[in-house]
Image 1 (spheres, helix red, strand yellow):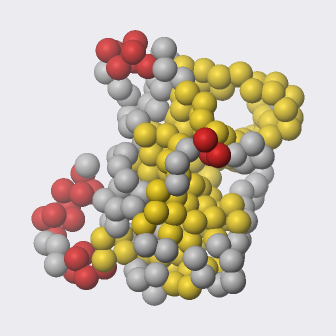
Image 2 (cartoon, helix red, strand yellow; image 1 turned 180 degrees about the horizontal axis):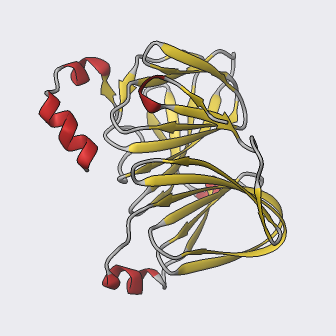
Length: 230
């Protein structure tokens, strides 16, 4: 069962809880947010994965590979692999569905350029309705901040703490996090090396964009209500 922190932040383990079984897949349904949901899929054999409604992005942990499944698209996978799957729970227009059937993409992390922001770096894998990236956080704790999007994280390497306001919990490889839009948070890296994470967020944008908590204090209740409706 997911641990709940301040502001609706949720934290769980990669394969925590009892999975559902569908053929060669074991499926853990971890988070269902306002517009995005996250599952972990463990495949042993062959399976065809489809995205019937909103955009879906997959990340194969063992192969460091991202897959974008637009509405109506599918991909066939084979092997003993673990995937982090995030879906946008919005039905696209008929035109977008027709266009999307031709545009499934598979992207290797190593083929993507490194983008640097201060002492951090990230690589974008998918930019569509939804953004998928892998980022690196150096030792220490950055200032609390918030985003104008809904986000899920999966820790790939390193350990530390996930802070949500004044609450925190330990994180390590396999920790999965749901962050509601606008919730102040930060990731603290308590090791001497990098902490690496997979991030997926909606609406799409730049992984480098974040807002200091003091800017949230200046926002009116009306602005917060508009954010919740988006």
